[in-house]
Length: 278
Ligand code: C2E
Ligand code: CA
Ligand code: CA
Ligand code: CA
Image (cartoon, rainbow, N blue to C red; front, side):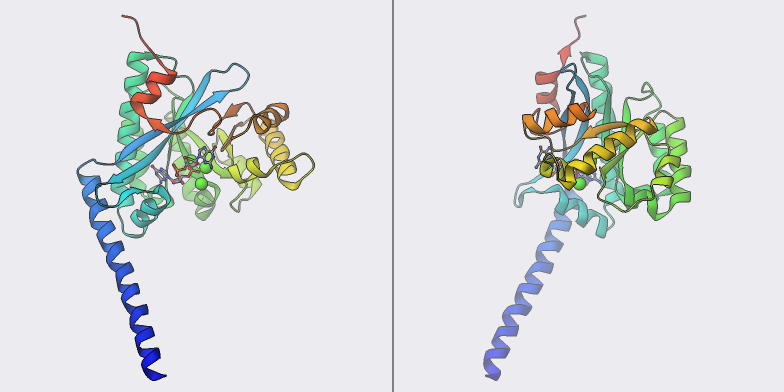
């Protein structure tokens, strides 16, 4: 019996250390990928259902590693947050997205609306982040670049958040609340933050049917946004039925697999932008 337990725990130990090893290896490779600029950004389009035209895009980070393959963003972003790499990763994302946006605005017609990037909580706490963003976007027209933040990030330190967001807004950077409805938030605080867009979380969109709770939540979010003068973007729209429901409720900006998956920059331009004739 004792032997059985011993061998059992050895298996357990070795799988634990294997896990640590894997994580250490992934960390080392992620560090390299950041330093050697081997990450990439994909861009997912957003469309206005009333006109069928582009109304923006979201930049999403991708990591393809020669040994590890495609690592899901949820996994490497979390690792980057835990191990202090999120600052350099996040700065690269911002830099890359802004460079891409400048290229699209200069050489193409058809990019309308806002390009947004995701900002993690730690990045948002970094007092230099706002400076960095303001400096990097200083050559861009106002309103073409935005950040996506979750409610929880803003609520963690509302005073700091409010100040940072005000500075960003003053310099023309838009603020979208990501995954709206899933975090904990004080609605009264929300009205005091300089927010321009609520992104309705895809879990609501994908589960809404006439008469159910998710449908009621989506209806309420859209009505509240309208009353507060905020725009809404629907995330994860996969079916024509979802799109029709959202449109009827007054949400017009659609992001999801129905209209377009995230794609590399060149494919985005090929499919949805037109080269300027000059
Ligand atoms: P998110 O910000 O909520 O991004 C939307 C996610 O939904 C993306 O997953 C996108 O590919 C996916 N999506 C879009 N349309 C649909 C749809 O119709 N159906 C379904 N099922 N999914 C759809 P992705 O690219 O895997 O990213 C996952 C998360 O990783 C993001 O969630 C975001 O929180 C984080 N992330 C991605 N890139 C970055 C980044 O550059 N910085 C930071 N801090 N986080 C990032
Ligand atoms: Ca997002
Ligand atoms: Ca989201
Ligand atoms: Ca999310």
